Image 1 (cartoon, rainbow, N blue to C red):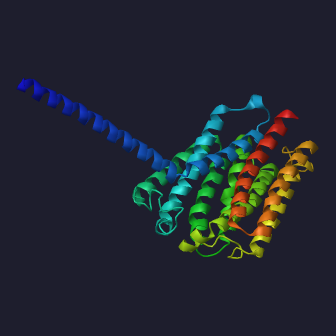
Image 2 (image 1 turned 90 degrees about the horizontal axis):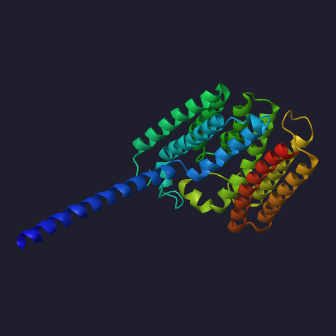
Length: 319
């Protein structure tokens, strides 16, 4: 009886130990996966990749000429480039991220991931991204590399120095849409330039809206995100102005001088309605000057750019 009891205890211990090890391994994998998504800002990266895919779809001559392998390389390479930029950014801003409620729980500032590990991930993603984009064509890889350089080496340091950082950051932010066109065609012409211009103007109302409703949090880290430095009429007016420029840029393809990228008059009317929708919330921010209005404008701006790209794509393949 005694031997049986001891045998039962040993068997039970081994079983529990195996279960515990499996749980620990599962938790470890889950935490690593979660930290990877956070260090690369997965949701942001996916939205950027969507812009590249939209540009790619606008660049191909027809749906029958769609090269799925190129599209997959663009998506993975694009994610790697955005993820690398975000990882570099979090290492550089580690001490500042600790000060803000929005960022203090990120992997690096919370010490769940060491800066060296984050840098290793950033460099690996950069190499993988550049190589994948280079296999598409040289120009695609070049623009991808330029995007990382500007975001990491110029935009990030400027955030604590001048509100012009948003202007500088608008350049890498505008590259993904036109990157898809360059990946599809191998050329940077007026078509890619128009795609760049649209997303360039979109950056300002979008990021100034973020800077508005997160003003107090950014202030803790000394970030200058609003053009006037304050949540005032001047900033609100500039948001309206750049929204107007965005609407104008989005309608340029209907005028007939934008090469292979053009839209019908019906589509132009839909694009105009989308622009007026966003302008309405920009004006509402000017009228109320509240964080709630700024947050709403930010959400509308995200919906706007996604819907605009989808409308362009539908116009291309349905007209």
